[in-house]
Picture 1 (cartoon, rainbow, N blue to C red):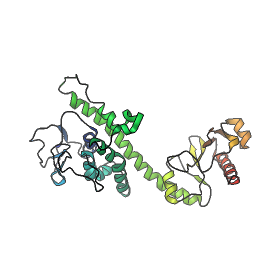
Picture 2 (picture 1 turned 60 degrees about the vertical axis):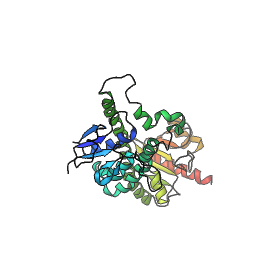
Picture 3 (picture 1 turned 135 degrees about the vertical axis):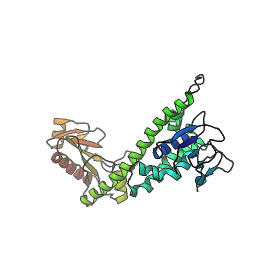
Picture 4 (picture 1 turned 90 degrees about the vertical axis):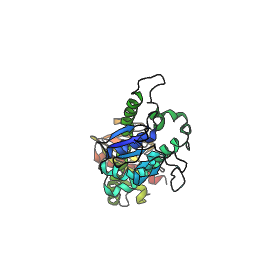
Length: 308
């Protein structure tokens, strides 16, 4: 079977068929996007996938609409849009096409559904008002994508299709970046878990480079860790670990005497040659060598223990 056409509706576009098109054009790069409401074109056939039009949902016939009276819903009764349906049936293959390791596909597929597809589905179905984003409403992805529609007095017959393809490129950039970050996070977790095992009962986690580390620390139950050391270009950094992913309070702060100091002043306050910087918020410090940052970490751990 060769898919030659990706068929969606003509006219004004929305985030759901744009995001569906991101997925499908990755899997079927030689297929033509056909934006139409012609009855023959939106009739299921072996050479096409139809989405967000056709008033039917039948995966075997490759038609994925959600505007019909018996519109499809998730197991938790939340509504699908075309994007959620396309992601449900084609998302895993899309991730494979994006070179996501097989062992990470299930988790990333689920995460993208919850955090990307579902919000688009809810907005498209009127079950979620973008205005809930408050002052940031104009910066939500569905609103930004729809802002690329032609203005009302653009009478060029090709304007809608041109705007659709321009918006598609932007939608692709955001979606593929999100997938890439989730795949990178999965790679980082493996490396961080190895480093946690190496750290043992120590209070300082040393990583070979900057990377996401919080989820792996939580996964490992490594509540004893207080600080993280990483190389930072030619320097090294010492960072605190937040108590909660969505908060700013640290498990332990860097010493109060270091706050806001640089270079010679920080060397004098810490007693560590090579100390270069400590943020006034006491959540990160920098030194010019691994030896210096390890010495700073040892001091920070001692001071944190003294305050317990």
